[in-house]
Image (tube, rainbow, N blue to C red; front, side, top):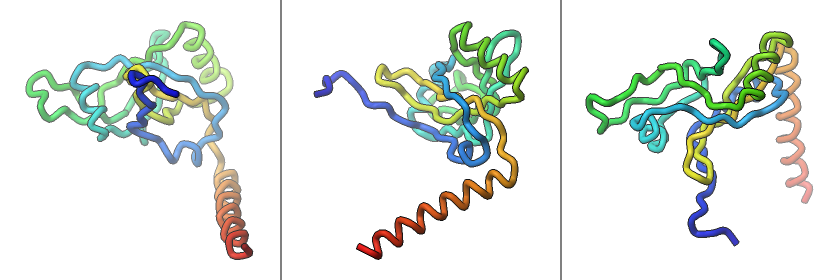
Amino acid sequence: MADKNERPIKVVAENRKARFNYAIEDTVEAGIALTGTEVKSIRSGKSTIAESYADSKNGEIWLINATIPEYLQGNRFNHEPKRPRKLLLHRRQINKLIGAVDREGMTLIPLKLYFNERGRAKLQLAIAKGKKLHDKRESEKKRDWGREKGRLMRARG
């Protein structure tokens, strides 16, 4: 039985097209360096990570193009909605991600933005390789066949 103090994971934003556009190799959980108004705005649930990606600069990993809208009650202390945000990772993880991007031609794609059990904002980051057009068609056929198979099985009884 779960403790009363333990909170479930609350997913705030999800990049649903990432699994269709990219072949995901590995995932990493990263913290995000945020300001106070950004945290409040994320809790309201209006942030998006659909067009965002992660990039390395000066030995650090940054989240680029993620939209966290301004907090309505933030007045002059508000933040810029599309500013680059530093991702908090261990040095070994950073080296692994930078090596994968440089050597193997991979891309760092955010999959989910969520609050963990302790109430901290986390980002699930994927090391992925872009799919070609024929790979996308194949995954679409597989998904359609799964749906059709489910319909046939229900119709059969």
